[in-house]
Each structure stands twice: as C-alpha cells, then as structure tokens.
Image (cartoon, rainbow over all chains, first blue to last red; front, side, top):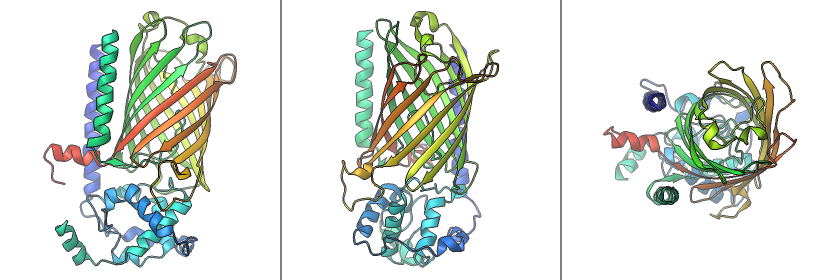
Length: 149
Length: 297
C-alpha cells in the first residue's frame, strides 16, 4: 500500500513537471516569425486547388468546423487567442488554399499546433474556404479588436 | 457495500453533470477504438476525461464487469500523458479496485507521413484482479479469470508496457497497427501482443448546420487484437484473439459515446466482450489550472 502511494505521488509530480515543461515550450522565447512555417509548404502542395472552391455550403460548414476545433486557440473571430496567432494576418490570407491545407494537415508540432489530418480532407478544404472568406485584418486592427473583447 | 456502490454512482453522476455544464468543452473527433491506438494525440492543454466499461462472459466461471476512468492530457502537440484508475465487479463474487496505470505517447516525427509512428510507454501498478483487457499479451486466456477475486487480488504486478504505434490516414480511412511488448518487473519474460484497427467517418464532408445525428458525427470501424506468446514461446499457441466492430458518436455538445462488441476467435478467448465508453474533452484545461494558481495567461 505504502509503495502504491509513493508511486501515485510520483506520477502526479511527473504530470505537474510535464505541464510546466509544456508551458515553457509554448512560451517559445525568442521564437521566429509565427507565420514562417507557411513558407515551408512544398511547391506541389502550394499549387493544389481547393476542390470545394465552388461549393455553396463550404463556407458555412467551414465556420462550424472552425468553431469546434480552431476557435479555442485562434479566437472566435480568428484574430488570435492565448495559444494561436491571428489567421486574418496578410501572411495567412494571402497564402494559397493549398498552403493553408498543407499547414493544417501537418500542423506545427514543435510549436504547439497539432496535426489536423484527423479531419477528413473535404472538411479541411471547407475550413480553408471559411478562413479565406474572412479577409485580412492588419496587426494594429487585430490589437484594437482584441482590446475591445 | 451496497450503500458504497450507490454513493459512488451518485458522486460519478454529479461529477459528469458538473463536467457537462460548468467547463468549456471541445468537440472531439474520436476514433471508435478501445484497444488500438492511432497516431492522433490529445490537443495541447486539453484534458479528456473518459469512463469506459467492459462486460465479459466467462465459461465455467462468473461473468464480469470491469471499468476504468481515464484522464488524458495533451502536454504538448507531440506528447500526451494519461492516467487510469481501474476496477471490476465479478458477478456472484465481489467488487474490487484493480490499480492504476500511467501512459505516455510521443510523436517523434514533426510532419504527417504515409505511416506515422508513435512511441508508447506505460507503467502499471495493478493486482491480479485487473480485467479491463485493454491489451491482450502473451498467453492471456479466458481461464486466467476463473479464480475468485479474493485469491487473485493478492498478486501484485508492476509492469512496463511498450508499444510501437503505426498509423495512416488515406482518403478518410484510418489504418492503425500496434505492436505490443509487456514486462512484469518481477522475474518474468517479455510478453507480446498486437492490435489492428480500421475506421472511417460515415461522411467525409461536414454539413452546414449543427446536428446530432448527421453521418459526419459517426465513425465506424473494426479492430482485431490478441496475444503473441512470450520470449520463450513466441507464436499463436495458447493465445486469445478478438474481432470487434466498434462505433464512435461525436456529439456536437462535446460528449463522445463509443460502443464495441468483441467476439472471441478461438477457444482460449472470452466469447463476448461488450464495451462502452463516454468521454468529454475540456478545452484549455492546462490554462485553467495555471490561472487557478495565479499565473498570468
């Protein structure tokens, strides 16, 4: 019984340390431009066209997927949140649909964004349509909008 | 004892009710597997709480109902850590606490590939009454469960389990293979097992409206798992194997319900393992804990 208690508290301590380490990793002091990962998309992925470009329901469906899976980190209006950057920055909005799709699929695992290949391909394309429909909000306007929230 | 069981059910009910109403939830996209792991880790900072049960038949003995609570936390996007508490009721016998398990899953590769490996390490501190059958290894067979709880609870097992999880997603289909090895830290040989799973959402495209029963919310699949003997007697002799169709229902209110019926494939297997589980994901749990302890967000 005694050893079980020791093991239990050992596990709890390790869990706490892991959470602290995760926090430290996320702080990412001195990290480079958060949008730099977009430039790493291979040419072939970058040039992929959105097969749902003309689907009239894609934006509405993409909005629901965004609310379910993305808003927690990137904010309700995609202006950025506690964990994720604004998706309405020119770097994202001017990227090709293929680039955004590639980033979603692969994530930025070392910087805290999980891979989203768990979402079926058509749903990722619906999400791309929604994101592209939001339009650019420049950084100063993002700051102002976040202050108002 | 009856009062204790009623009390614990009441506490469990209140706990899940509170969980349902008081914390921000995230809509999960869970696979239907109970035994097989795919390569998707918990989202960083999120905590998933799950309660699962297995009802198993026992020829020549008493049927049983085992259950476990899982607390799965996404420490980072490449590391998920999970804590389990296990218990079981053997009919016409008794209800016992079986022990705890602590597992960690690591994603070594940064990007998606056609086959994605995940490394899995688990420590188990359980007694002989563990009947969760979350993995089948070595020569685990139905006859192991014939002894009474009073006898087998005296056995104390400390085990380390290692898994290599290989998983791919192609055109909406997830195909996962787990290679399992387990070692009792007392002087016992390494035991081996496997788990395979295939699953797919019923619809790949999302509808432009919220709905509970749309096909996109259901993921159906099948898993197969069993033992492969141990270091000294590797192979299929005296091992048990199961085939289990399974389905997950990811509800838009953040709850996930999973069901599976596992059928024994040979005489050493339990005839039926009926499993069900309910899970809820808490969005930004890590941040809530940090703010509770006074950290600035």
